[in-house]
Length: 273
Image (tube, rainbow, N blue to C red):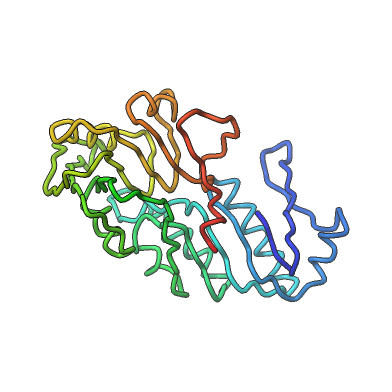
């Protein structure tokens, strides 16, 4: 979490024996200078888990107490972004998180490739999505894994001369994915690679299903371009690389510093420029 005032500052934190998160800006000179500030231009955070959320809100609460104004909040991975539909017996996690953000009345909130537009409707201030900046080559075939991803590609203006659009069926009770199919495709003779583009890869079931559909079209290498790489399936990203030729993601969620062949990790903050 980097904070500009106007120079960058990293907020240190620790965990109490009971598991609670703590921060204390008085422990070093830079933190004390930050407490004397009245204005923070940019606040960067990525909300991967409950600890990240607590770190953010502890800091926002401290800023509110010290009357420090925050101009823009940049969020890499937005926790609860997929918990955006009301279901019987379950809380709406995204609404809960956005209600907490609304309390601090931050003028601008910008989120890297949010899962849907629902968060925009739940925030008091208009949320600005940050477009993914993966670079596609001229002969790449853009593969859209489902209709939700198609809607987002249209919104971002992401197109290719060759494209394949797929879809699937998800059982709302079990989460099981079935009936993967290609619903539209146009592949030029110069095409030489499939690139599946989506916002989140969790266990990877969607992309394995889409890959099986592609084998019925052409025998091309298949790459996976994922903004937020959770890679929670058994074997993680290395298991995915047994199927996919290359994978690109950002460090908005994936933070493994070990270099892995055929995996490229972009710094998510580099996409803000």
